[in-house]
Image 1 (cartoon, rainbow, N blue to C red):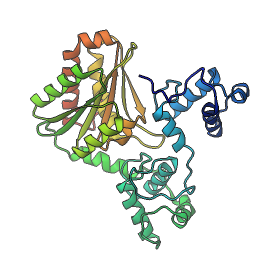
Image 2 (cartoon, rainbow, N blue to C red):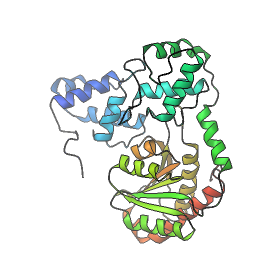
Image 3 (tube, rainbow, N blue to C red):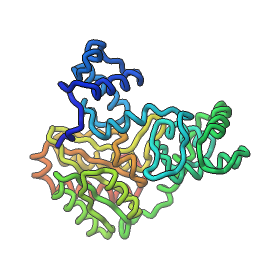
Length: 330
């Protein structure tokens, strides 16, 4: 169901005008006729879709809560505000920039996800310690100034977070038994999710099955469970399949990418529609701390008919990924 606060084509008013100004400020210029009338017209929708595609979101052309939040985050530039650990954690392009710069200097921020969490704080304190600054874990004026002054020392090499993730994948156990796994769904794929969870348990894995429309709640639950893998399932009304993993402009989840290729390979053998493997920044992929994929499967009739086959295929894909998490499935 579409949120009543969402904006879509045909809407008018100050909220539409605010959206148009924000998009224009980010370089997505909208027809002046629509802007002057404060009208959500075809050009506003196309520019919003361009923004959603650029930011790795669902390209619906509708201003939903997820897109609205990312649109607000996009306005923050490093140095515009103080960054410090709080609850809920700060998110924004300024955090992305901070994490990217620290990572290129060799400080381990964990995943570069634009979320100012404990790993980012620890990396920032290490930076402050190394450069004789107050070790408060706050990205204030002085810390940002020093970081930007040494920006020329960045290298084009691999971020330390990527090296660490690949090493962790390399040394992990290949056994599925006793691994903590999460199978999530969003209301319309309970049968498929339950079948997949059941088959994974039969292989010895410890699995929790999550059904909550709020992706952030699912992510928090998976993180609290200390899950080693998350797979989300959603049945699409259209005739396409997409296997998504977390990816930004400068980084990606290496484990998520490889898991996505395994799932895509498995689905290809079962349904008539060839699935695509896509890097995105959907909330569930961004907020989970473990390798995660989201499987959007269609058409619905075929998915329902082949529920057990798909569940078995995904179970086998996950098992294969644990056996060799660094392998790319062709």
